[in-house]
Length: 167
Length: 158
Image (cartoon, rainbow over all chains, first blue to last red; front, side, top):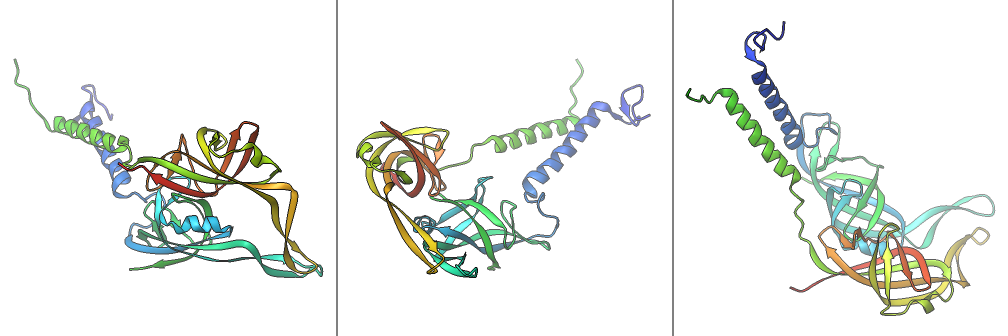
């Protein structure tokens, strides 16, 4: 019997005392998960090294006013979670090129007037594990992934074009 | 009366209560923000709208701006109307050609409104304003929709 007639678990410990010990264990596990291993849900590796990351997000087919809004720099947040994913350190605009079909059915790449590709360099502290690079909020940086981002001034998404460790 | 004993279990209970209170305070503590009151100057580009829209919107008019769900009062600072312009790819000459349509208009409206400003956002009323966001403009005789194309924040002096 787990619980005897005196209300003791395994005949040794009072049921109330047992509940208290159980609560302490749950609290310790919860605190560890919440505060000590904040990116534990997204990261499979137990070994993680804090690193400084620099990554470039390309935003295509934007007008110059959007480029100028990115040039005001500042922190970048994930649009959904609102968590900071880095700070803008550099913004470069290139003519936006896209494919168009000619009268002969050929596809030509043309610069679209008044449209730009903005290359936004973002720096962030994060973690490197055996499986990848993560920014501090737990978001994994993967080449080609779409980032839904907002800054103080602008709300536009882009695609990760490069990732670099800078320390 | 028996002397009260303070056992190991009592210590654990006290510990659990203290930890619970600390975790609760940390979790419920509002995010620290250095929010200041100020003004936002927002330029909205309304494309492909009716000619003569600028006649209905006058500088210093009090209008309402919104994000589709919520609205807030704003003051018109500037209105500019031009013929609708659009680049189209001409597959025969393999070039982009600018087409202007005099029967339709592109209207730029600059408005100002009271705003709460932090390092990460500019809030007018109950909604955040950013370049790229859709914005409605409502006033006497017009209810139009465009996109925020410029945004400036002016913080109040102490």
